[in-house]
Image (cartoon, rainbow, N blue to C red; front, side, top):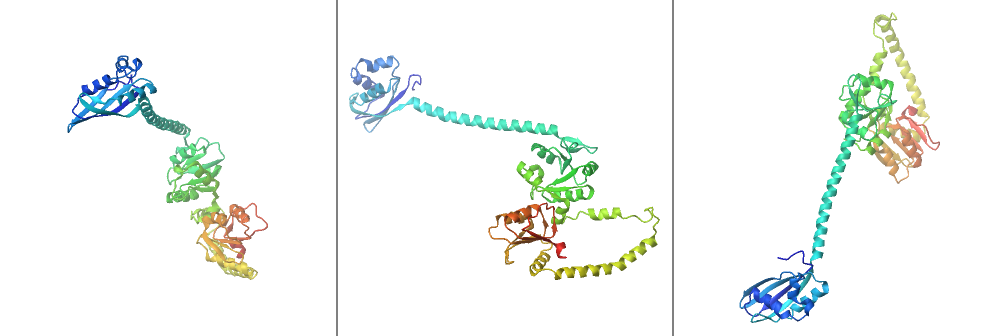
Length: 431
């Protein structure tokens, strides 16, 4: 067994003997044939007594009248003395009564091997430590962050709606679906949120929407559409923002949240573009019409019936007049405008857009939702845009950058700046 406290180098030698020899024969040959060979300073016996040379290990086997084995000599001498001692072993030519040869295979630096093992083990320990610290640090940060957000979330109104701390003082509010949505927005610094918590919109939110600028921020799935319809019927919503398709507000990243809020639309524009039937117009009309016997102005059934008959009599005349005006307007259209009008009628309800070149040919046809993105990436020259949607400021700005001369759409949205180089036509202009 090698003593690690006295070992710096390890001499490894092979022995071959022409006959049967045993371990004591090998050790005797080593000490006997090197004695006096290297001087007193490198005398093997003295070195072993002074613990400069460790215990000599020998393994020998005999087979077929010959012996072979291995010798291990640990040394705490310096490199030069160890190499001299190893070379001296190869001068041994007899072991016991047999001829023999000794060949030194290697001198291993035990400390280098130890350092390599230390290095490898240290890497493993450090990796484990860093991984544990990272996990612990992340969990601590998340725990602290979550606890802060939980402290910030409040219950608002008699229905105790989950809400951010600034709902009461902010002029604008975000109406979301559930508590998890409020927590996610709080995580990203948005504190003026309040949750519906189901499809039955609480009275608190209905009243808040009348007092503040309200934005409905709903999921990008069918559930979000249902809640949006409910909100549009019972609350006064000013803007609509949606999570990306098939995503929920509670799982959005900060970048996705900010992008969705930046792209929010006025309610009228959203309804026009996406055709949501919320029933609000019909409800408002019914509220405005007085009920028979309850209008306080003494109108009776006969008077109401008489007015209805008068309206019916006037309706054909007004209809004929409008048709005549439309016909006259169409006669004034240029061939190009007439072509655009027919194209617009052909795309009605399909939510499609066509990019046209200067000759009126179709460069490409895309979905209305992808119009701005495709227009921005289009490398071919685009002269006109005809699409089934609302003309917005973003579309006008992109069209100006791409050198578009005409935009034809269903309706004009909130366009504050309209370059003089762009002509805009809506369905109303044609009719």
